Image (cartoon, rainbow, N blue to C red; front, side, top):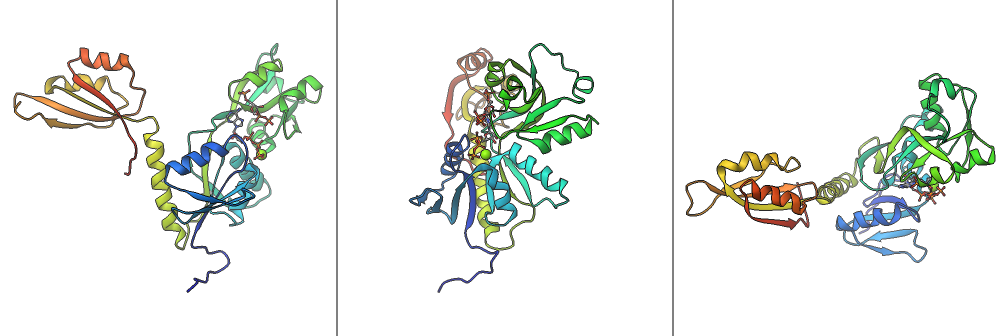
Length: 306
Ligand SMILES: Nc1ncnc2c1ncn2[C@@H]1O[C@H](COP(=O)(O)OP(=O)(O)OP(=O)(O)O)[C@@H](O)[C@H]1O
Ligand SMILES: O=P(O)(O)OC[C@H]1O[C@H](OP(=O)(O)OP(=O)(O)O)[C@H](O)[C@@H]1O
Ligand SMILES: [Mg+2]
């Protein structure tokens, strides 16, 4: 028998992701690593979840916070820059905050920064009053200016912001920066960070009151596991128990290790197993060997469930 649901209830979870852009491929890869699989619709706008009751809606990234606010989607993967911009914009219109960041996802890293002509010094309180600043993030920039009591003109542009000073439309910019290549190609230099951004998992401020609560919890647990093992390796070695404290000093990014006495060696040799989160280079292994470790092995971690 088919289950009947109230308009705002669903028995499947719906996640909005960017249809085409910088966040599309890494978002799909992360969800696939968490064990999701889909059947794609012909127009590639809706992916029906096969392995779990989780469907994907593929949209423009700017629409994702609004889709969550309207309850059309339950979760979304979007840049923090877009999420906070829309939150500030809603707040300035006196609307309550209908979405929140649940997790940083570790991809799409960039920074919203001021870019100024290469010849300028950076003295914002002195320089910015009366200047024209080109940006696609008027609410984020507006709040930054307001907090410092600076009165400047915000010139709204939806793309190619870095061109504005060359075209005479603005004196400086406030735009996303990653490598800094776009700024320097336009004779601008990055000077101050307004927001550190990455892709985030966003969800509603209120928790789900139906079956979606359990599905979302399972997904979050899996995503946490996937993100935790991204740069993780399992390090195995043997060593005299007495050198263990020194070995652990050489492994500041390791979780507390499992230490097991070696069979037939009551004198104190142990086997050590530790989850490490940094790069496990040859240099680090050689340092550990010099400190008394032997039989060193670095193993990839495939899955993790806390
Ligand atoms: N240079 C960059 N390096 C890394 N991440 C970036 C960079 N520029 C933008 N991003 C992040 O990627 C997100 C998506 O960028 P993209 O350029 O694909 O968006 P868009 O052009 O607005 O796409 P859409 O067509 O969906 O509206 C940005 O909101 C930001 O969080
Ligand atoms: O510091 P960089 O590594 O040069 O990256 C920064 C550029 O990347 C983004 O633009 P994108 O390439 O997405 O084009 P857009 O102007 O159409 O948004 C951003 O808006 C900057 O222009
Ligand atoms: Mg967009």
